Length: 374
Ligand SMILES: Cc1ncc(COP(=O)(O)O)c(C=O)c1O
Image (cartoon, rainbow, N blue to C red; front, side, top):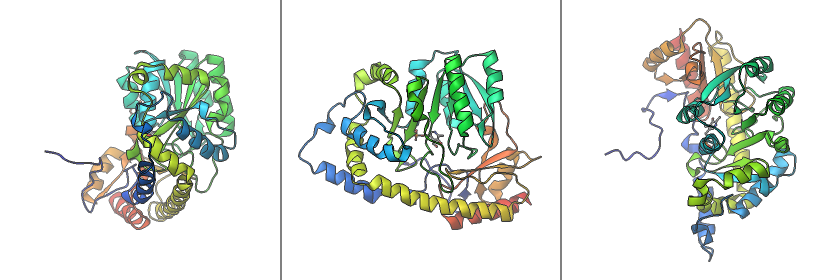
């Protein structure tokens, strides 16, 4: 009988620098206990009912108020739809906007688990090269001359795995192309608020009026992934299409119970507090990791990330999967680049994450990697 609760299954003593989920020390149980007990002690139980399809209105209102100053433009609760995280939002969008055999474009590299969702829907995936400023627009134009995708899936800010951010110029070009060729931009902005040494460009949600943008975000990296909560930001047409789907007709809006608890948490200013703490802790880790890589792994090529979770290292002339086998002997892990490629490339890259370990363990992990590379 396997009674495991969490997915993480790292043997003791092993440092898995590849693990991309937050460490348990980053998950604010006290904050959630307080928010839950405050909500549950109120003499009202409507949130135990099936919820409205678009998601709890009070929660969307609180979320819009939280987002407005951070995005730097007015966010309306009418343009928000409550999801159970980006993964399920992507799955729902594939259900509603694609047919098996349709083409979608992704970045090369991209978030590897999105590729599995697209495969579940029988989609053909074409990948577009990226560089330090994100999607290479000339390559996108070339790909568009061969096929028109249903959507282009981008992680525009502090990308997983590269850490790169799509430049404002390229964002504008991508938008223009979406209008010209009539495809959707699905912007996965899960790391938008985790900037440590750089404020990223404005959220793609600023462009929902173009009718070509759906911006997705999540509480997984700013509060806790176990909540399974996120939001979709788009124009009324898109929201109406989603709200009318069979899943919501049958099950009602997503996660009304958790929404009710998070509503109080946001109104109380606790999401702001948690985010400030995360930016401090993770920013420090990123700095330590950056220094350790520079000092101990001079042979790798990379750009120092300004936010998010990840370091993307090029180990020219080496095979990351082979290295991974050898690294096990040194009790250290990472994710080989090939997992983030939809064309079996990038095998001389590897991804490291700062999310799972404290600074001392990150440094120790880099020292182990150094020995392994020697
Ligand atoms: C780019 C990206 N998108 C989506 C997710 C998953 O988001 P959620 O937990 O909201 O489903 C992750 C998690 O690592 C991610 O890195």
